[in-house]
Amino acid sequence: MTAILIADDDEDIRDLVAFKLEAAGFDVTAVDNGLAALSEARVSPPDLVVLDVMMPGLSGIDVCRQLRAERSTAHLPIILLTARAQEGDVQVGFGAGADDYVVKPFSPKELVSRVEAVLARARA
Image (cartoon, rainbow, N blue to C red; front, side, top):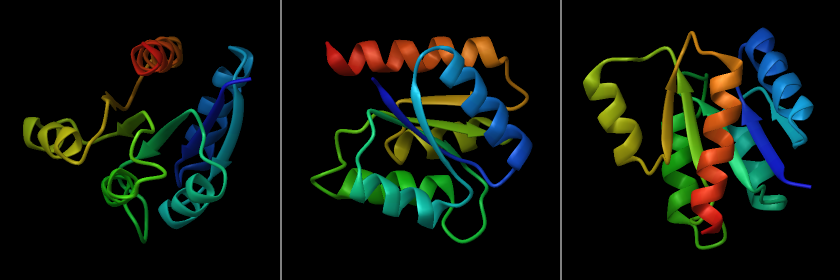
């Protein structure tokens, strides 16, 4: 089963994303902060990571950069999920190494489609 790691400090969003991805057949691990996401990805690398950008402690951008900097996690597909929609924010996200950037509010169906598309590109 395809493993997805979700990190979002908003419990409602984290639960919604986890529910929709599990309903789509993914095995989901959900954490509430960037440090936990980094630790989980290092211990048990998932097939894809969904990161909220604005989390206390380590932001999703920080986690993305650190995952890209480490040999064992550099290949992981990463989707940033954020309320930050300005052009500069998007550039920072892709500059940190994100494979996709989804702006809140978002359609859960669209997020599942984007997860599937990023996974398909990563496997190609």
